[in-house]
Amino acid sequence: MALHFKCLPTELEEDQISDYLHLLKQEHNTPSDSYFKHTVFGLRMLCKVEHIKPHDIGLPSIKRPNKLPVVLSKAEMWSLLQAPDLLKHKILIGLLYGCGLRCLEARSVRIQDIDMDRKTLHVVQGKGKKDRYVPISDHLIRGIQKYLDAENPDTWLFNGQPEANRKGGDFDSRYSQKGVQWAVSSAAKKAGIIKHINVHTLRHTYATHLLEDGMDIMTLKEMLGHERIETTLVYLHIAQSGRRKAFSPLDTLFTECGPRSK
Image (cartoon, rainbow, N blue to C red; front, side):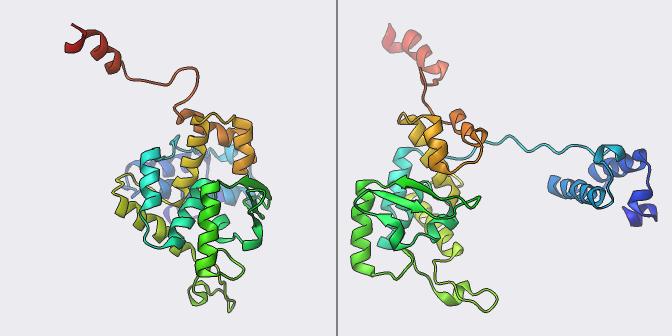
């Protein structure tokens, strides 16, 4: 903007900024909406540093796209759990889905965080630096015990290669983020799942399946570790639950007018 007008952006009039943003959006063949958004965000930061209110120079508001997350059906989730060859990856995927963990939370599970008797997992310092407890399925407990007996991991439930997690001279012996991502993507490919999924898809699937199985929204909020209930409410738009499940008019049309109805 400074190069375009040959002056500091703070010296521009509101209509000049609006014209530039219009030019950027319409005439310069901007490669993506994110480029335009980062221009606006950069100008907002400039306003903050210079103690200028953004609306005083006519900056547009940026709305987040209202996208719903991708979730797996129970049949797809079952196929995903069966797909890995390594027991380690089976347990990893089972923990991501069965406890609704974020990627970093799954990587950070220590052996001492798992209470086999109480069937709970202590999620330590999750997002927002908050602890929470989540229940563990009997099926997953049996799998974890089998995995512990076979692999005998030390400290972390999922150990990785320290060389792959080196940062600033320090070594991190936890399973790497790329390792978790690879385990999920390779299992999805082997299971023949064509949906575009990632590690967080299993958390979305966890929340949706719990709602469909009858869990109330407030309990789900606590289990997910959400700060705001609005974050949890998005799953109400996905879950096929309620007083009557959503259905297609084709179902009733075929029932009432199809060949078998006559």
